[in-house]
Image (cartoon, rainbow, N blue to C red; front, side, top):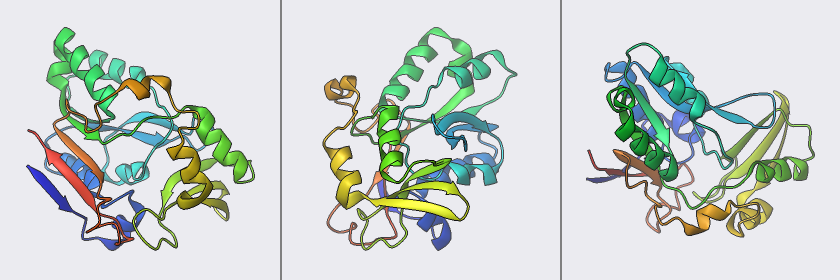
Length: 232
């Protein structure tokens, strides 16, 4: 099925990359007992590498994962913890290439097939190296401890978001997507070469996929809207 929508909580919607449905879906999996934990990227809070894949058991912790991550994270450590840890069930958020890697691993390792119960995909147009984040931080003045790729503060429409570099709770600098941030992103600055050969935009091997509703009928809404393709 294909769906479109957003969360009813306006504060949660404003803090999300698009309509907030991916975060809501993860929370509902935990609340309803469908899984014991979820695996999501979380900010490290101390600079590069900025984000890391983490196992989260509390609904409140999922809020720290809202937004987009345009720099690579590695998945090996959490998958080892899933495979070698106690018998539990998980949901994992994955880019298309990660979803394929997970499915290949599940063919070889029965524990991963049994324990990774849900694979949530994110639409992807290509990944960038850690140099991309470093360049944006430098352009924002340097010295950042935490970054956000998708701030909606002051947005006039769905594509008018900002990269924000924070030195501390009171000091932050932003770069608009429709200016230098977007220019670097769309012109593949520090883009991974392998992504040029990938045709899996919509995470074909995931159970469900979330993406921005950057379509004429939705992109005028600066609050953000989610598109969903559910395959399972």
